[in-house]
Image (tube, rainbow, N blue to C red; front, top):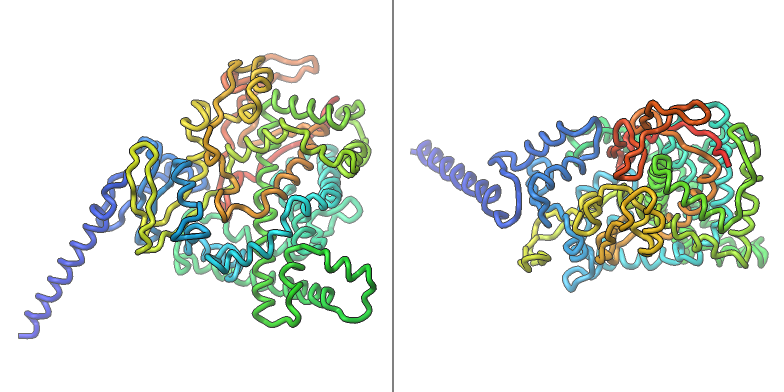
Amino acid sequence: MLLPLLAAAAVLLLSLGYSKLRYIRFRQHANLKQHPSTLLLGHVKLFGDYIKRNKPRAHPDMAIVALHRDLGRPPLMYLDMRPVGDAMVVVGNSDIADQITKSSDAFPTSPPKSSRSLTRLLYVTGRTSILAQHGDEWKQLRKRFNPGFAPQYISTFTPEILDKGLIFLDRLDALCSSGDTFSLLYLTTRLTFDIIGKVVMEADLDAQPTSKNQNSQGELISLYESLLNAYNGDTLNLPWWLTLGRVRKRAALAAKITSLLQSIVRRKHAELHSSSGSNETEKKTAAAARSVLSLSLQDVPTLTPRIIDETCDQLRTFLFAGHDTTSILLSWAFYELSRTPRALSAVRAELDAVFGPLPPSSPSSSSSPSDDTRTMRAHLLSPEKKDALAQLPYLDAVIKETLRVHPPGGTARAIPRGSNFSVRLPDSGETVLLDGLLAYNCQTIIHGDAAAFGADADAFVPERWLPADDARRLLATELDARPPPLSSSPGAWRPFERGPRNCIGQELAYIEARVIIALAARRYDFVKVGLGAVLVGDDVNHDGEKKPVVDEAKGQLRVNEEVYPTRQVTSKPVDGMMMRIKRAVS
């Protein structure tokens, strides 16, 4: 008697489970634009097929872009990645992206970030990172650290940025002499790590070997580099138990980093709260310090294990975020300038106008970086010329366009069930409920929206950020005299995201990029090797070298293949931006 009852119960449960699964897969979000899915795997197999069609080691966003394109580029695209991921909507419209990241009654600081993404970053940023906080907890942390990233305060680091920039130029000079191929991303990463160490901890991380000591290398940067490399090959946000070996390696490296940071925290706390032996100058210096570390500890009379751990997590977060975006930006910017002659010429002319022309040079010139940059340094540090960086509109346009074409990454927000959070579609006015879904603002899609940036939205055109008359003047010789349209929606450009949780360090990234490009753009010619190398034709120049082939439609030099992004925690050039370099002839 019992066996038939159990069998009937099993059949009933299977039937209910089947009905529930069919509802979840095919009916629950049937109102959202989506590709056909399967009962057991939703869109997982389809996404895997698109990943396989991708280029080797390509960022998964490239598969998402292809899925979005093949679906007709809807403002919202539904992807059901369960059971290995989340049920999500990919946002391809700037108006909807703004609705998701703005403050609302339900979410005063905007919807919470994806727990799956935060878990993946756990060993990089720590459990109590500001990135992982929401609501009032996040608001208090943001309020505490805002002074450390205020534009007026960040500008005081210009001398340090210049000093670190000169070390960077020393390394480039050595590569000019050797002719060696090198990873530009590696060098810019070391450079920006050096800078963020000063801003975050008032410490010299020795990330860049100097000409005096080529073997100099800080232990912290070495460990951090190994930790980030432990994320190579991550195509999906897979559960930890499917990547156990990598997780163990990350945990071991993170523990060593934590140990080093704990020592730094203890030393800084002792320095800030020493009650004896401090003269008035030292006390005033401590009181004026606004680094992330100082701001974390200034109101903490006694260190506890919890405070130490929380402080270390904030340091880890800002060290990572503070070096990553700028190093990637610089790599892409120098690459785009190297294959866009009119843009490079415009940047150099603008720098000549503001700082004065460089002395004549040749490929064999041996002048040191300090010789070439003495006048520029004086301009940037003198009270009369302190706003020189604001007089470089074309350079700013290059930075903005680089961030548009090569965005550092999007944001994923987890919409809680029962929150009744909805967005309004811009064209139809239809309201779409997003409860229980992950909303992913895909910057690659939004920044490439033809409705916002014109038919050539995929092209690198810095002039789109300039006043119309200036753009026409600069474009007329190589492109259509009519500049590409610039979107009227501010949300169409969002490399630092928008809303209350926008990037706290964006002003630092801007200053770093302006200074470093200003230092290097006139002194060097970067030459891409391997992937993305410039194609040459049969014609030769006066030196007997074959001339590069020009893509007249884009106003750029043709390349063997476009450099594309890979995923290493964030979006980075797949080959590390391999280059050769030579002294520019002026």
